[in-house]
Image 1 (spheres, helix red, strand yellow):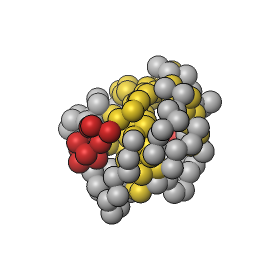
Image 2 (tube, one colour; image 1 turned 45 degrees about the horizontal axis):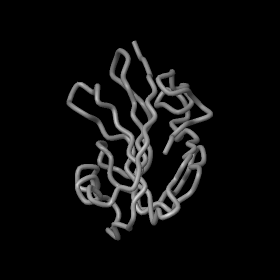
Image 3 (cartoon, rainbow, N blue to C red; image 1 turned 90 degrees about the horizontal axis):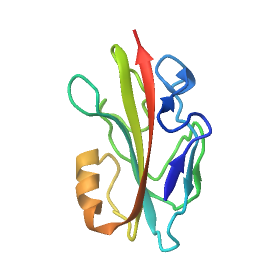
Length: 144
């Protein structure tokens, strides 16, 4: 499986449009090679370089299998809670310096079936034995 975006290259710079310095909208994502037996998907975006430890920017689960996730998506599967203790996408917003932002998509052989607002740790623990394939896309964003 492969995860890409028309907004930025893997290991490239994330445009300000998708950050707290811009419109803070989610970038378009394309998923290639999604296994035919995929029942649902999970999407996680985090910043492993945050000063307080990994910062979760986006968590969604029980996403209908699809080859793309549209830019500025308003609703995506069941929304999980991010590190701001809210649901939905929160774009890159490092306090200073350059941070890595990792988007990860997991194809599952089941659905989770939980209510909204589960956190990333719980979701990843739940899907552990149900991952058919996974893919990541990493981008950088810098602030002075």
